[in-house]
Amino acid sequence: MKVDILASGSAGNCIALTTNDSTILVDVGIAKTKVETRLLDVSILPQNIKALLVTHAHSDHVKGIPLANKFNIPVYAAEDEWKSILKVDIPLQNKFKPASDFNIGGWYIQAFKTHHDSFSPSGYTITDENGFKVSICLDTGHVDEEMLSTMEYSNVYIIESNHEPNMVEASDYPPSTKARILSHIGHLSNEQTADALSRLVMGVGEQIYLTHLSSKNNMPALAEMTTKRALAKKGLKAGKHYHLTVH
Image (cartoon, rainbow, N blue to C red; front, side):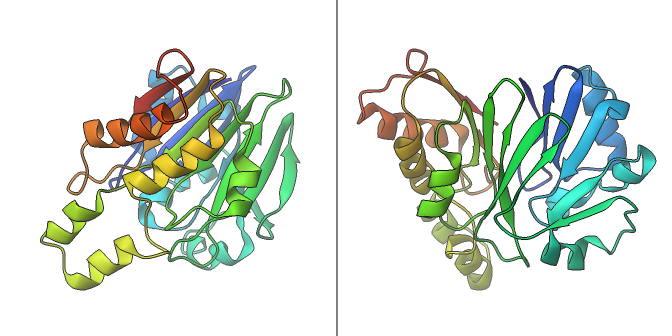
């Protein structure tokens, strides 16, 4: 399976998974025209996109959703999340109950509940016909046992490593924003992400993508170091037991 992270961060998020010329998008948080350009940059034709999965309806995850109308792409999201998505008319709507599983062509999808300040946010595991499994976990204030159980045994982990708490506390954000980020329905800190990965990664060559880093309250090197340190405690070395990329 080919993994392309087309956008990552507070300015927008978009992930493309492709196998056998069939693509699934997870989130389209940048403008439609930018999504089209970045798809072509990685040799993906919009006409080959079989589905768009939405994690939640915040702007940095659905800004480019009109792409679905232009190319008749079915959109999937938890049923309560459509309360916000329906600000844009989407003809091909697919609503699922939280923690559901379903098939899209040759893809097997498991949606799992995450913890964020939206109606019904979801993460996804996506498995192709060859059994190659990708876990996507964005925008969640914590990782619970059910999430870990759903994501285990993945070949690829795409997970947010949003902030360093001390940097949030020292930032010029208003107290309410700081409290939101650090809350159990906010975003994952570097340490929280590292802890989750230390429980998931077995050292059999998994690919890790650290995503959705805050531009003000984190540094790529810090996020990378925190995860590597946690995995080193298990005796796992980057480049040997797993591979790590920071977006």
